[in-house]
Image 1 (cartoon, rainbow, N blue to C red):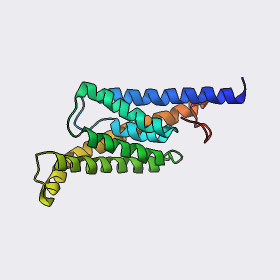
Image 2 (cartoon, one colour):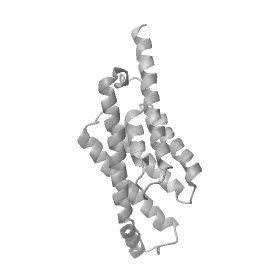
Image 3 (cartoon, one colour):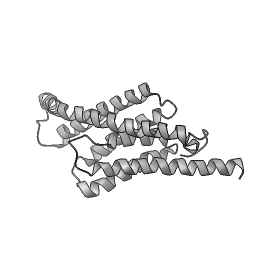
Image 4 (cartoon, rainbow, N blue to C red):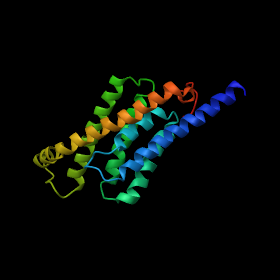
Length: 185
């Protein structure tokens, strides 16, 4: 087998393993868990960091979220939630060639903070729980703080499993190692 065909096979295998990890994370979202202690933030970061094709990196986690929402249900804040996860994919894109534990940890914290900020703003702006005043916004963010800790804990747990598990697999399965810059996954 020539080198180009071998690299293409490795790319297909690597992409399949990455997609399988994302699908597994999406499936874990629909099993019972505490509020916001879910793998979706980690899934979005992982997708952005690991999938080279920009369109697939953004599209695949959205499809996985949508598939989960078919079981969980939809609500009027879904566009806000989906937008927030697209921001997490964007943060993951920054990690593509910088997957050190400190940078992945920083991206995880940034992803949890932006999710908290974006979704709580959406609750305040689109919901009927809080008055649309600065005071109402402040109360909304204060009420969301317990959920932030669950978001951060879930993101940290699942980022560790996804990125750590993949890094461990790369050590033992050379075909999983990052392809050249021109590859698509």
